[in-house]
Amino acid sequence: MEVLMPYNKLNISGAQAEVLSWVTHGLDYQEENMLRNVSRLPCLYKHVALMPDAHLGKGSMVGSVIATKEAVIPATVGVDIGCGMMAVKTPFKSGILDRKMAEFRHEIERAIPVGFNAYKESVDEASRWDGWETFDDLHRGVQDRKRKAMVQLGTLGGGNHFIEVCLDTEDNVWLMLHSGSRNIGKELAERHIATAKSLHRLNELPSPDLAYFIQGTDEFKAYWHDLDWAQKYAMKNREIMMKRLINSFNRMFGADLDLESKIQNPKSKIDVAVNCHHNYVAMEEHFGEKVYVTRKGAINAEDGRYGIIPGSMGAKSFIIKGLGNPQSFNSCSHGAGRKMSRTKAKAKYTIDDLKKQTAGVECRKDKGVVDEIPGAYKDIEEVMRAQNDLVEVVAELKQVICVKG
Image (cartoon, rainbow, N blue to C red):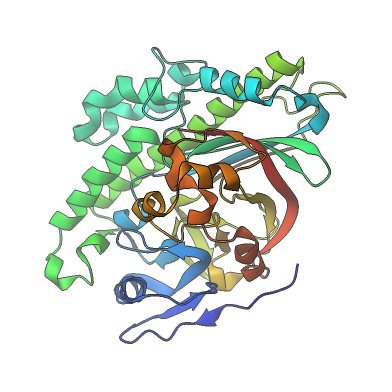
C-alpha cells in the first residue's frame, strides 16, 4: 500500500504543545480550536496525536490520542466508555451463505437486541459476570440502574454500532461487531464529567469540557474504578454478542464454531479473534515514562498487536497489526471517521441514495439509517494510506450483511 503522506506538525496559532497529525485534509476553525485547547492543558504529556479519521467531538477531537501525566480527563474519553470492535475469522467460504443472507440477517436481529431494545432477562453468562460483584462500588447515581445494565449486557445499541458478516479477499467469512458500554457507561461518564467540572474554575480551563481529575484524589480513584468497570463491561458486551452471533451461525449453517475453545474440529476452526477498545484510557509507558493514554476514536497499534479498522456500511474494513510508532503513542485510527454530521447526512441523502451506496449488502435501507450512509463517512482507503507508518494490513474485508440499531 503506497504511503499517502507521513505525519506532519500542525501550525496552530496559540497552541502550547505540538500536534502531530496524520489527517490528509484541512482543519476548520472549530477543529483547530479544539486542538489548541487540548494543547494548553497543564497535564498534557509531550504532544497530541491526531489520527487520519479525526473529526469534531466534545471537548477533544474524535480520532485523537492524548497522553497525560498524573491526570485523566473524563470528557476526552467520551460517554461511550470502552466502545470498540470484535471480529472472528471462520474457516468457511462465501458459498455457505448462498441464498440465506436475508434469512441470516433476520436471525441475527432475533438473537441480539438492537437500538433501545434489551433482553427481558439477562442472558447466557451475563448474570454470572464477575463485574456485578463490584457494582455497589460504582457512582451512587447509577445504583438504581443495575437491572437495566444486566439486561443490556450483550446488546448492540444504535447509532454507528453494527453487526456484520464480511468476506475477505480470499473469500473467507468473518463475523464482526461494534458496540460499547451501553447506557450504564453513558451514565457513569456523565456523572464523572459533571464532578470534574465542579472541581475547577471553568473559566481557568482552556475549555469546560477539559476538566480533569488529579491522580491521588478521591475523585480520581472513584473515576478510575468506574472507568475500569465500564471498559470491562464493554469488552464483555461484545464477547456475549459474538457468542450469540456464532450460535446463530452454527444453527443456520450446521457449523460447530466455539469462541471459548477457539478450535473445535478441523472443519470449524476460528483462526483469528480480536476484541479491542477504541474509546478508553490505559496506563502505558511512552518515551520512558508511565502516562495515562486516552484514545478517543483510536486503537492500540503497538508492534504486532491485532486491531480492527472498519469503514462505513458500504465500504471495506481492515484487520491490522500495529507497527508501534512511538509518535502516535502506538495508536492508529478506529475507522473511516465521519465527514458530515448526522443532521447534514439526513438533509443531503435520500433512501434511494442509501440503496445505491449499499448495493450488494443485505441491510436495512430505510430512513432510520440514512445518517449512516457511506457518503457521510471519509474514504476508508485514503484513511488507510495515511497511516501506512502505523499499521500493517492483515486482511481486507467487505461486508455482505449489516445489522444496524
